[in-house]
Image (tube, rainbow, N blue to C red; front, side):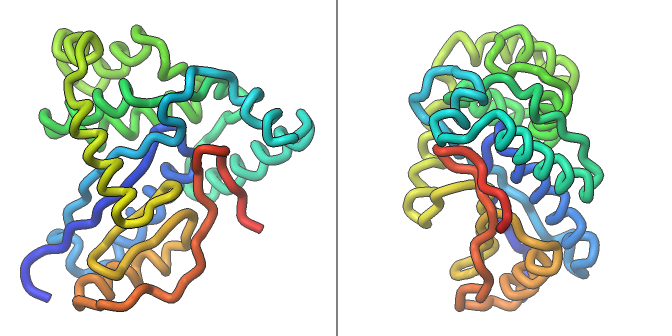
Amino acid sequence: MNGSLTVQVWSDPLCPWCWVAERRLDKALAEFPNRDKVSIVLRSFRLMPGTPVHTVGELFARKGLSEAETRARFDQMEQIAATEGLTYHLASTDLAGDTMDILRLIKFAGTKRIESKFVERLYRAYLSEHASLFERETLLRLSDEVGLDRSGAEAVLDSRAFQEEVERDEEDARNVGVRGVPYYLFAEGVALAGDQPVERYLSALRQAWNHAQENISVPVGATCGPDGCELPS
């Protein structure tokens, strides 16, 4: 393949698998000989569209999980994250809900070419630092920290700016069959959904680069969806 390769990534900042997947893709890219010709495009996906802010505990309770079962799931996810050098404190991630405002701010960051930096900061704040991404001042503080213009961020939050862009990403996700995140689309017929090992990301990069037109023969890994996040069996 000549030219370049664009990898589209659907994710939600509340998704613990998405940060893990990002790290694994980075490792695959480090081994990919055409790394400098690969572009990553971040696409929006709301895990809980239209859902009011609620506690994570309420979400697990609706699934019929006890407090002990919830803690066990957190522990397992934290151990998986640690293998990728990430420190999760999931018992402290109090709130969940519709992330439209957060995703609109990410789109704004994209206009300043600091989208990836902002998403990384959001992951760390939510999954590691017990920060609520549903508080205006928290979002503005995090915007400041990555160099995003505060007045511009305030203007976004006070309006419907970038909402159409977020909704367009979600429509595209439905069209390609995305039901949970993370979801990676490398090329036509080359996609990975959910938790995957580094080797499969590298395989997907190679197949997409070589214009593969058949789906990669791999199982769908653990994802986050409207009903919460799965764990590997």
